[in-house]
Image (cartoon, rainbow, N blue to C red; front, side, top):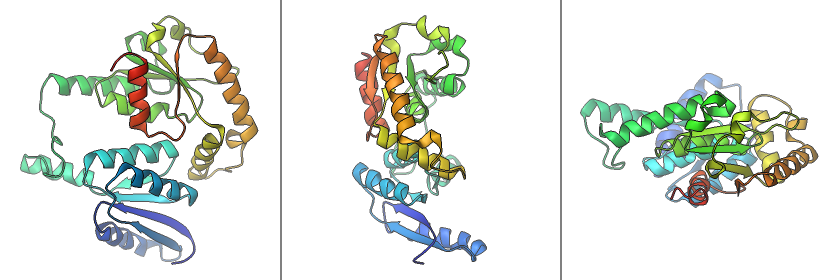
Length: 268
C-alpha cells in the first residue's frame, strides 16, 4: 500500500517471517491502510540506527525478527529511547523453546543463564533498578552503584536497565525546572552520579514521537524547541554547580552511553 501508517519490518534474514505474521494480523484491520517496509539482512549496529531513524521519521511501528541477541537488545533499547512502539517476534519464542528443550539456541550462546553468583547479582541489580526508576524511593539512592540525573527523555530509563543487565545497581532521578531534587541526591558520593544532557533538536524529535505514540499533540509545550532549550539551559546551569560527570547522550546508542558512564565514573 502506498498510503497510510507504516510498519517497519527488521530482520537479519529475508524478513518473510515477520511480513507473513504482520499480514495475518492486518487481516483484522482491512479498513486501515498500512505500508509494510521490509529491511532485510540487518547485521550491524549502524543498520539498526539507520532503520530506526527512518521509522521515527515515519512514526512507524517496528516489528523485528533478529536472532542475534545483542542486535535484538539494541533494537529494543533504541526503540524505547526514541519512543517507538516495537514488537520482538522472535526472542520470546526462542527463550520458551530454549527452556523447553533445555539448551540455548546456537545463534545466541548464553541465552540461558547459569545459576551462579553473577546471575543472581544481575537479577538483584535489575530488581533494584526497576524500583528506583524515575526518582522512586529516593531513600535508597545511597545503595546505587550509579545514579543518573537528567530532564525528561534523556534516556535515563533505558540506560538504567541496560546497565542493570550488566550487574550495576542504577537509580535515576528526573530533573524538573522549579522542583528541587530529593535531598538524598546531595548526600551520596558525587563520583557515582552522571548528569545527562542532549542536543535540543534531538530531544524535540524524541518527545514529539512520544506524544504521537500517546495520541497527543506533538506540538505541545513538552516538545516545543524554545521550551526545551530553556530546560536544557536550566539543567546545564544546575549541573555546573555540582562535581558530577556530565555526559551528552545525543545521537549515541545506549551501549555507547553506558560505556562512557562506566569510564567517566571510574567503574571500567
